[in-house]
Length: 392
Image (cartoon, rainbow, N blue to C red; front, side, top):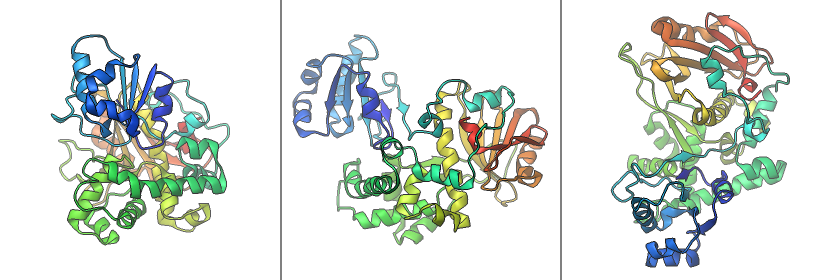
């Protein structure tokens, strides 16, 4: 089961692997599966791609029955742009389905640098991180962020055409996709402008630990409506939640998740921002850069041999705050701070040093990501590194 936001390349990727493709968002192809999914499924040469399977949920039970007959693995690909609750009794996938998340492309992927070890694995192994041969500057990073990782926008269009594609993406998201989401099309109709306003509020607060009530108030919606919109955007996988890190050693850690728009290009599009607009707003500048770095790390998490998990850390007093904490096997930790500046100092690493001193040998390495050109040592086990080190 391959899941991810719409237009990240799920169908394109799986079509290259499948012998048969069924598009269940097309009424003519869906009709037979609605009438008798078992018979319909047997008519296709395997492996079969069942695209947008959640629109005809009966097909999942047919796949389950076929799997249970023991005819072998890797016979079906399920893809969808809505995160259906397949763990429930309605979609009994446990032990039968392997879930793979597909995200917008990282810069490393866009530049074709897909060989070699993942950055997180290199860091976990204690390898030296060299300075990039060519390092972008701050405006370059903003341009990369606003280009984003959706394949069509990032690879096939430029300038005004890319902006038009992203604006259309958001328009379809708030007018069409929410109606196809389980729970999104039932009951009274959801107004597109209200969903857009709520998504704008999320974009303004991307990369932030924000009380939900603040977002509801900014979007002028009730708590009940806001919770419904949260659920919709989560299911459409355009909002990502990074959970708070916890440990028995620490008693006063914030438990709220950190909320990210899944790709920074959507922040620029929904807020009508270009590079000059981002540079003119210090608050949004930091949020865009933070969101961009997390977008580069998500694929790293998926391919890393150390199977890392991503968190953030913040104490309740706000005295210590670390943008990202990566937990490796055995409770080992990496810590990341993300700065828009080009010349980080030891002051920028003080919270990483605090974590290092608190957890001792469990602290493997810390990195202060910045927009300058060089890698250099800040403190014991803590370096400053250009953001471009993630793909160089």
